[in-house]
Length: 201
Image 1 (spheres, rainbow, N blue to C red):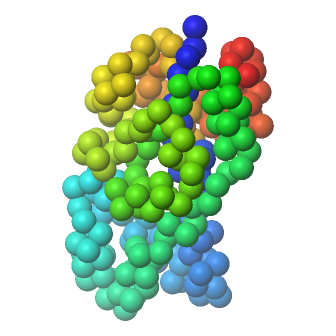
Image 2 (image 1 turned 90 degrees about the vertical axis):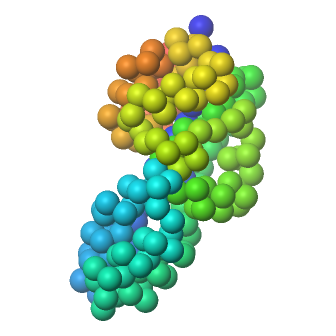
């Protein structure tokens, strides 16, 4: 019997569309937007930020040296990109319905610790959960097996009684490897339909 629902954050509970954000911020210069996306959001440094093995100040330095003409923009983006993370209200509504039904609610996300602190303070629904495991806090990344084991052990969860929702299919599959049912999130409507099919909603 399912009693626990675990949510990813980015692209599930909060919007995360960095390419669109950069194009809006630096329009009409597509060159700047594309260069910043490739060197920030698609970089090895971004992975290290999520893993918690690199500080933002160091990332600014390394990326800035790689594209010195855009040093100012690199610093600006790394200081302000959390602005693109706004609630996906359809999913937030589903989370609220699940909470009303007395399901245990947890968060499991690959995220920079500083950005998590910002959005955690900003959005009350991210605090109205039973707990969370954030990649930068534990120096692990989905879909590593160990990060799923971390949330299971930290909160004494029974994997067969859990559902994990993630916008990345490999991350949902990673949860299934430790016995948690994974749902690949595409939209709030699709998620609601799948949860109803499972008898959860």
